[in-house]
Structure formats: structure tokens, C-alpha cells
Image 1: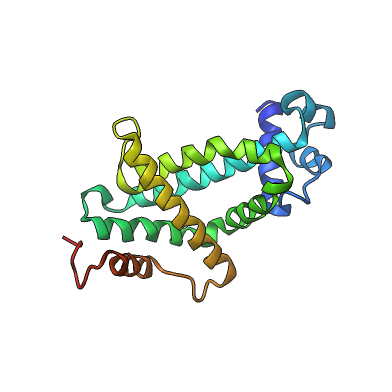
Image 2: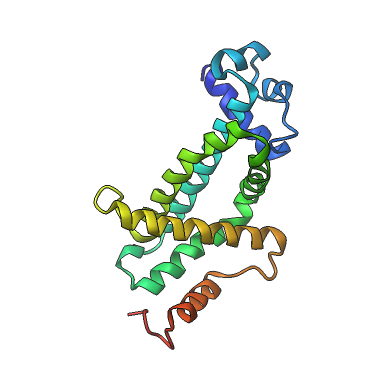
Length: 197
């Protein structure tokens, strides 16, 4: 790897270990085996590098969840409520391995109001994340049906944020995939096994 890639990987490790606010340029340099000048040369600033590293970490998390879902049965062939539950099982099962990423996401959200550059950096990837969620959970191709993908992705993104907060606060009482599915059934006015076939 070159200095650019070394810096990005070093910044990812620092973010997971120290968080956004506590990571210094010197930490990144020590972790990456590069020098201070290379941060400015390749990324313009430490903040720009950290923003890219954070986006990379969340993308890697999404890829890992998608891969774990693909190992099981093809969820696209399941009835809607089973597909919903199976998708959330993958997300929730990944919690322990990805707790550092979830914790980092909480820190990043808390910084948005005081960091306009961070807010701008996250706006585009947030839209892309919605598309990925719509495709990953429901198999909706954004190019074939952009409005349906937008709406489904927005729903899943909102639900993901709420589930993440509950797992961060109290994993003992946080919702399971089954809890989410049963709650969805109540919201939709479904009784018994409706929607599972």
C-alpha cells in the first residue's frame, strides 16, 4: 500500500480504538507508519481523512452484514415478514462484532451540528446507504424503481438508527429480530401468521 492507503487504514483503526474526537494526527501517523505532512498532501486535513475513514468503516459494516445474510437461505425467496425478520437477524447478530462502529456512529451524529464539513461529507453517503438498505433487505433495484427504493431505504435507515441506539443503551432489553417483526405485524394490523406466506 502507498501512504494514501496506509493513512486511511490507520485512521480507521484509530477511529475504532479512540473515536473521532480523541484521534489526533499524530495517532494516525503512528498507526499508519507515515508522516504528518502526508495527511495534508493526500487528504487536505485530518478531519477530511477521518470523515473518509468513517465512511469506509460504515461501508465495510454494511458489506459484512450483507455477506452474513447471503450465507443463509436466499431471503429474496421468503415471504415478506420472514424476509424482514431474517434481515434483522443478520444486523442484530453482527452487533457484538461491530459495536465499535455503532459507537462511532453515535459519536459522529453528536458532532454534526458543530461540524458543517462533516455534515456535508455524510449527506451523500446517507442517500447511498438508503439505496443499499433497500436492495439488501428487499432486493429493490434503485435504477428500476427509484421512488420505491428511496421510501424503503428511508424506512430501514430510520429503524436501524433506533435499533442501534437501543442496543447501545441496554443490550439486555434491546429488540430482537422477532420483536421487530411482531411489532411490524401490530402496526400493520396483522394477526397470527398473516404475511408469512
